[in-house]
Image (tube, helix red, strand yellow):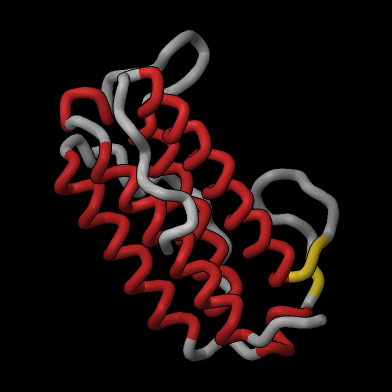
Length: 155
C-alpha cells in the first residue's frame, strides 16, 4: 500500500511531536552535556543533526538547493533547541506545499552521504529513520538518568 504525501507528512509530524516530548523530558543541564560513554554525543547534538538533515533534504527536494551544513552550532539552551525544532518544521511545512508526489518519486544520486541513488521519498524515509534512531538513544539516556521517558505511543 502506498501512502499519500499528506499521510507522509502526518507521520513526520507525529514523530517530531514525540521527539519534542523527549527533549522536554531532559533536565536542561543534561541535554547538552550528558553522554554515557565516548564516543556517544549528548542528545542535543543528535537533535541538531536531525534538524540539519531535515532542512538540507527539504530544501533540496523542494527548491533543488542541495547544501548540508550545521545551522545550529550556536544553539545552547533547551529553549533555543525547542525553538529550532519548530523553526525547521515550519520551514518544512512551507516547502511541503510545493513538493508533488511525482517529485517524491524522482531518483537521484545522494548529494550528502555517499549513499546509492534513491528517490526523494526514500531520502525522507532515511531522515525519519535517523530521527527515530536518535530519539531511541534519547530514551536510553533518560532511563540512565533515572527519568521515565514519554510514552512512545502518544504522538
